[in-house]
Amino acid sequence: MLPFYLRPVHLLALAGLVATAGCAPTYELGLKPARPTQQFTEGQEQALAVGDSVEVRLRFVCYEPTRVVFEAEYYNPTKRSLVVDPADFKYQASRLSVSEPAPGQKRKRPKPLPGTQVTAAEAAASMALPLPPLPPSAVAAFDPEPEIRALSERAEKEAAKAARIDWLGIALGAASLATDVASIGKRETTAQYQSRAAIHDAAVTYSAISTAAKIGHAVTADVMQQRAANLQEYALRKVTLAPGYQVKGYLYFPRYDAADGLVVSAPVGSSAVPLEFVQVRTRR
Image (cartoon, rainbow, N blue to C red):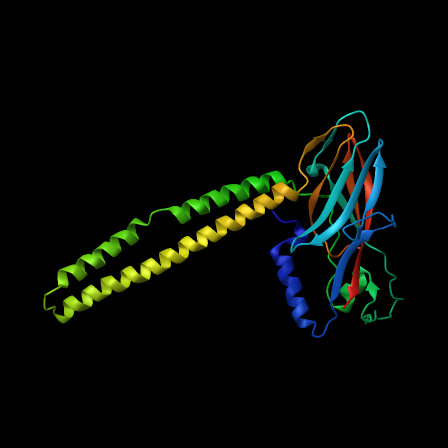
């Protein structure tokens, strides 16, 4: 189930408010480490923390429609093994405080210039949108294993539907062919011709619909298989990290656009280390 702040009723309400906002400004979201580390990979800066001599790096990758993607990297220089489990990652969202207007003074609607970075509250005010509440508790990362299994199972079902023999289509085709053969050399009445034409049209129409459905199932199967393969290859999965080894992979969290900061808690053995990010929104 989607978190309360991503449920369709909330998204639809926000969409309706956006539609009524007229020429409200739009913003580009981004995440970066709260403190510069000068550690970069693929052009993006990594947040860095060390716990029990284990080095943890985290960088923002991208936003998906309902998720935010990070890449986590662990290096274990110790002489003991370490279990890394994506299900143990969490983040705590925070928001910068804004000054309240004096009593009796109406809050002015901000009009940031293009290129200006603003807080979540300022962005909401400039778009005449209510500011959603912060998540009431820490937000856990998605465990990729159930999703990989679900995608693989759905791919198998869709592939089976695409390969299934359509006996009704075969029967309609045979009936159409039989009536055509039976009409050869015979003078048909109008009713007989119309009946034969109706069977032929039904067979052709059903064949087209059946073929399109089979193609749709095959395409869906391919898409599901590709998604499962991508998760298997790129997602951070539960692993026992041996001494001297490192591992990295993608972490998927529910995205929360109305936060100014995210503190990701990364597990290290029985404890965790914090990696702080600021979420910036730049006026387009």
